[in-house]
Length: 106
Length: 112
Image (cartoon, rainbow over all chains, first blue to last red; front, side, top):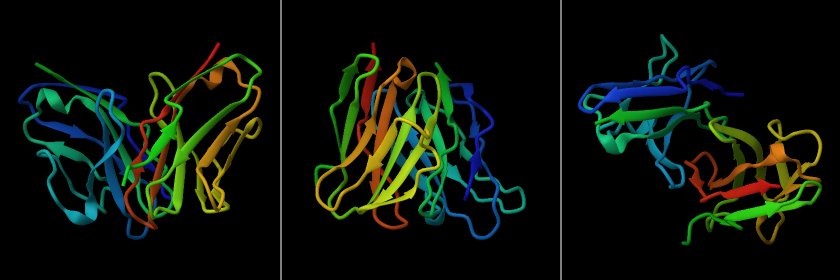
């Protein structure tokens, strides 16, 4: 099964600072990876999907096959980015990472 | 399309009772996933179902927990003889094949 690891359970950054949420995957082949976000009191929702290569709310994520990583990045964090972020592999087996709780300090 | 509907939103049970959590997937979605989110913890996969079939239940506790997704009607996550440790938020998600997940609002189970 496709698996991902999110090494940071908690991450705090100051508003305006760059932010990077780490995600590593541990399988070969062509991975399909997603980032989901859960804002306070809201349901989980898709943030971005690597094959679309788009930027959502200023976030981007690049698949690095050499490092087997799919880190989520944003150059300037905003307070409204505070949320729980989950990395997840695609296919039919969505074993989510353990999640990273991001707090953006005003 | 009303989205993924879960009910009830909140469920209170006493130890030893049964809990039934329902999930109606989005229209056209035949894949359903159940997750558990414990306080201060992340999202843990429990089970993946397609219509009338359990595809992957590797995240389900071996005892007391069961899930079904019948041909007609919602998917049901059933917890028998609940214990305090079962208290958690239970999320359901649905998708088409190999597509992104759409999540429900969750059921908060509290065991007294």
